[in-house]
Length: 452
Image 1 (tube, rainbow, N blue to C red):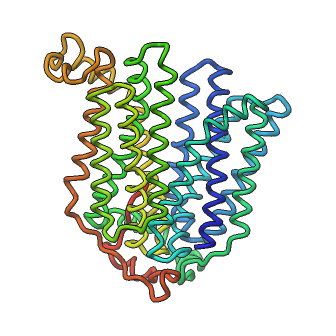
Image 2 (cartoon, rainbow, N blue to C red):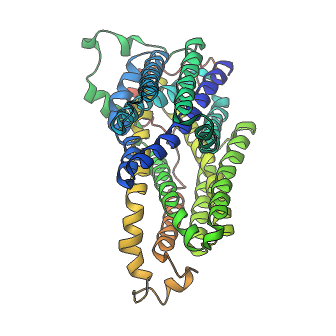
């Protein structure tokens, strides 16, 4: 567990630096261009390249040492951050350069997170995996909470140059923790690292990873739950701000937005810390179902009663469930998939879950304004029935979409709650030597679990 704590600390520092620079650079792009489209393009480039690189990243993570993959990806991200800082210091920073670095860092993340998730399996004992997943989620929660606030402070004190220097330092410290860490690699490396003629082709390895990801009905259900959860999170994030603004007088809007954002961050932090400190549940699936239903109910509440105080409570409840789903799902995947195949499985899983996030961001606006608003707006077919329940005279389309999103999330979780997931037998040496890869390749019923 000591090695994991060192690596997790490095991920926290790196994630915090990326959160600070991402917020500051997004603001810089909008200030330089005045274009919402270019700002949104930067957000999209943070997701899409990593999704496209995920299949290849998964195969490479399984073919090579996870520590080596982390070192290479961290080094590439550090060099990109250094290049951007140098460009800014000489006065030549351009929007296209920010885009290029964003693409590179997105691709690096496609290697970093599957390699880290797969390494945790051999880094910690089976009974500690839930706690390790929750600690990783805590690191991300802390980065999400503190990033924008620290970015605003740094921009006020030292401008964009200070932000980019901090970004470089964070990547360097994250790389240093991986250099210092020594953790075991999955056994039977010969099957994956021998001459190319002895290895299956890329297509065969990807097909195997996909089979492991969705081979069991329980794992297919889990992947659906986590993907829909990510889509719901993105949809709620996109719609919450307009709802807050539409239901609040102009003089109170800043305070209302701060209240809702803070409560959401607090829910994420409280749940993450609790999952890190408490004993992991012996039966993760009921916890996943309960947490997903709780979060779905929170989204439904936000749509039915879009008032700042209720929206703040709904944000707290929604993000309270997220770490529970993430850490419990990660435990199931790590227990159901042999360590030698986890790179592919976790990379493909990340591709699906990030796809849910992208769909949520891309479809939230059009669905709210072009589909839901005409249904419940003045003169719409549902204006006199559903429209009256939404409790707001403006942005009823957003409120209706939130209601539908919350109901969908809860129903998806409940419909497959009876599924079970076959788990690999724990290894004799308490989790440091995984089940041989051959045992998994011959059985399509040894898949994983998803985490956003």
